[in-house]
Amino acid sequence: MADNEYDFFANGDGPDNAGGYDEYDGDDGSRRRRHPRAGQNTGRSAGQSMGQAGQAGQAAQFSSASRPSGRTTTYRAGFGSEPARRSRIAAIVALIAGLIAVVFGALSAAHESAPALVDPDGKVPGRYIALTCAICIAIAFVSVIVAKVNLPRNSRRHRVAAGGIVTLLVAGLLLAFGVVCGVLFPDGLFKPAIRDEAPVDSAESMRFGIERATGECKAGWTDLDVSTFPGVKNASLCAETRVAYVTFDSNTTKRLYDNPLQGKIAELLTQNADDPATQGDWRLLSGNEWIAFGPSESMTTLEHEWGGELTAITAADEADGQS
Image (cartoon, rainbow, N blue to C red; front, side, top):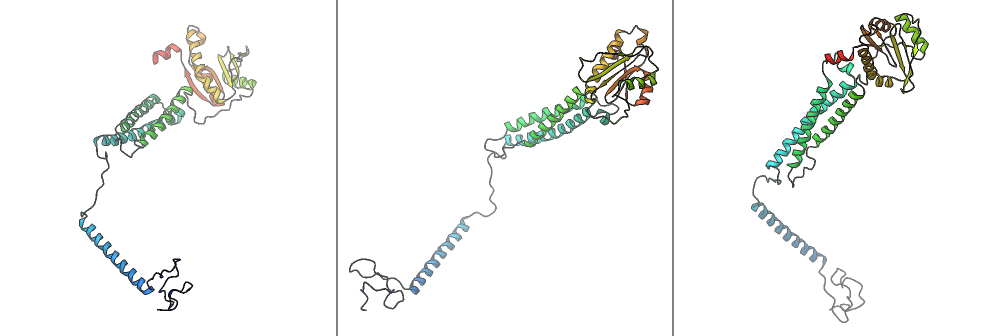
């Protein structure tokens, strides 16, 4: 036995410096623990690795032998059930009805905002377009509810009928816009450009231009009090030539007063139907910021001078009889 086998102060890995022994482990008088040499440790590790690899191969062969052949299909609960099928059908119906409602809603908005451009002859009433849009919106709304109610609880499709909901909202906004335009602006927000050369900035120029078309007002013009009508700049009439005009501060104000003014004129014609001065063919000539009223011949001549748009005015009872 070597002299330093039990030497407590040995610093090497063993007597031959090949890793044969470990250092002192702190036990008094005990032998040093033997440590396998590098070659022995490597061979033992390789053997263990080969054994583990063999066991893994056998486990893989056993697993492949016990696994059934063919594709594995995973079924989701509720996917093919009858409520789920009804939910899908209702979602499709909601989307189709919503798309149709969007189309008719856009047509309604365009028809009411620009009737002179979309339907210049007035052959298609705007209320029929709006009614069709409303019916499609109702169908889409009911279909969305059916799709939501029939959706299985364990389904992951939480956004069912999302397309129908989006189209439903868009169609509702378009329909509301068309209805508001039809109520507040019966003539539409957008009109084709018309010639307008009326001198609305000067009352004297307005009267002079009208007298050129209708004849001189020898009795003089009568100014009307317009202080109680916001947005109205001036209003004058000539009883001799049976002509009157009104000027406004903006085109928007003129549109707001257009229909009420026509209704008031028709009412006055009805009340004075027995007066020979109120009989005849009457016309309303309107521009961007002015309205003139008088006999058909005078307004036609004034249209050639200033431009504008002519509208026939009938008595209220005649209008009711025609409607």
